[in-house]
Amino acid sequence: MKILKQKAEPTGTISIRVPASLKTELDALRTQCNDAGFDLGGSLTDALVKTVKQIHAEIAHFKKHVPATANGMAKLN
Image 1 (cartoon, rainbow, N blue to C red):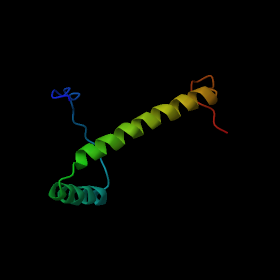
Image 2 (cartoon, helix red, strand yellow):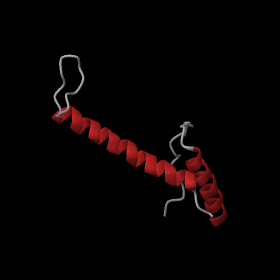
Image 3 (cartoon, helix red, strand yellow):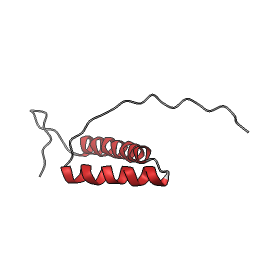
Image 4 (tube, rainbow, N blue to C red):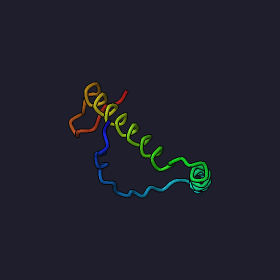
């Protein structure tokens, strides 16, 4: 049985602008999650990690399959 735990990766803070209605909803969810003992921040972080990985995959696919023009911009049909 392991007793010692690895240190988590250091964290940082980011700020993003979202519609006011979404902020209101997230504030309410944070309160509900805290009251129920859940970690909304951790859940949102996990979702963001998955989203970033998906974006990287889509960019790689795009670069591989969409030819660039002379000005470096991708040519879309």
